Amino acid sequence: MKMKQLVALFLSASISLAASLAFAGPDHAEFLKGPFKDGPSVTKACLECHDKQASDFIKTPHWLWKGPTKGHVRGYEHSKAEFGKTNMLNAFCVSVEGGPNQEARGHCTECHPSYFWNSKQFDLSDKTKIDCLICHAQKGDYGREDDKITEFADLDKAAASVSAPTLRNCGFCHFNGGGDNCVKHGDLESSLNTADRSLDVHMAVKAKGGQGFTCQACHVTKDHRIAGASTMMATYDGRVFCEDCHNGKNAPHQKSRNKAILNNHLKTVACQTCHIAYFARGKATRMSWDWSTVGKNLKIPPQEGRATFDNSKGTYSWARNVVPTYMWYDGTIKRYMKGEKIKDPSKPVIMTAPYGSINEKAAKIYPFKTYVGKQPMDAQYKYLSVFQQYKGLWDTLNWQKSLEDGAKGSGLPYSGTYKFVSTVSYIGQHHMIAPKEEALACGECHMGGTRMDWKALGYKGDPMKIGGRFAKQHIRK
Amino acid sequence: MKRIYSIIFCLSILFTGSLSLVNSAHADEIKMVGVITKIEMAADGKSATAILKDNKTSENVPISITDDLTLDKFKDHRIVEGDEIRCKFEKENNKNNSKLFKKTAGC
Image 1 (cartoon, each protein chain N blue to C red):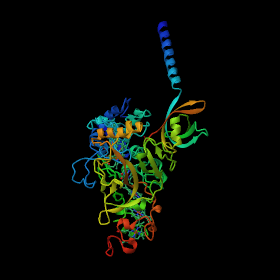
Image 2 (tube, chains in turn red, purple):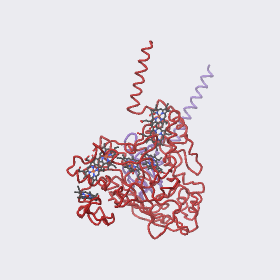
Image 3 (spheres, rainbow over the protein chains, first blue to last red):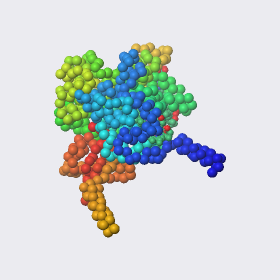
């Protein structure tokens, strides 16, 4: 072969390679032949070509389960401490720290992309322990069960099938937050896998009238930093707003008859408020969880077709098509943090709530899921307790023992007496955007509409009559 | 030469024998991941049939369930229609008898 020919061949080959890379990810079946004996040996193979990605990934909150608050949590603006799932409490399974050696992590690690952070000891700098497949595998029934890869998984097939994450990949953890499908969020659950436009105008595939968005279409990801803050968590890697896309020539309501009036709302009413008229539009979501009934063998009828009692976990309630709670949110949260004293246990402890008020220009009215709980607090030391549920309470139904073991893992001393306290969490709703025809009409909020509790929001009355908060004539409360 | 043939012969018998042994021990155990489209309890509550839509083929596969643990979960709605299931079953007498029936999510 002559030099020219060689060069031409090389050129065309590299062009076609580049083209295939540009339009779809490469077929990894070529790179990953296997057979793989376990998770880390897959990761080691990935690292041969993607060491940078792994080095990036181990710096993210998805790996560390903590990070700086970056001003997200009120009262912790100047704190140098890092917070996240690893050291925060919630009103679902409460904490990952229970057990003398934090054995609770053995269950919680199902949602940590590692092989396997199942006790206190885990080397967060060991890149070969990253589970790349949970976010990237498309085939081979890949999944995690507690601190194991499910025996249903075909590792070789899974490794060969990697691509950019799909809804299902992120959903493995986020649809099942709180321990089961649709428990934690009212707007993130497995119905999204097969959504049509009426359920979600963005994530439904094009054939079903949607935009075929992946999660990262909105949660833009760079160097494995997945953008988007939670109304429950302390740290984040960048924010996501509807206006990231709906701006400039894609600004909303341009052709609308009510263009001016709708856009006049945008400084005060968040997009989500008008475009998520109801949450839990797919499956029912859990609305409450009362741990105080553990061991009581109650017989209560199901709600929305789902169990309302589990002897090892307590009592639940469920609801579908729920009208959200509307609250001011300036993008920061008030959050109960581990060890904080409870001033008045006769009132619900605010686990997490949006921060903001009518007086803050940057705040807008957003929709929330109001979720109530009941969980143990230390009767003497007056803070929420950590208890060992997994390989503890769930088997023994013994509160005293599981509270003692919770204290050992969390380092939060237990006085020996506990009582149950109510909690409330306000969880942001951002997904399952309904088709434009279902956006809230004027009368839902104004002219006697009941969605907005004007007094609670700080208005003297319906702003349609008395003017909005930026109008000159409006007199604030 | 004869000896070699007979050795190969013996080996192959051993080999197929061991294969069939393995087979009979796991009489066609099939693994499947799918979403429940329907649960029907028998009137006496001692068995149930769940239809699973196979994630891979989209085929509807009826699974017979007789273990108390799973039946209890059906009765108190801890497992419901719409849940994704990891199932192992064996084909026996025209039935797909469940050997393992677990949600892919949940405690």
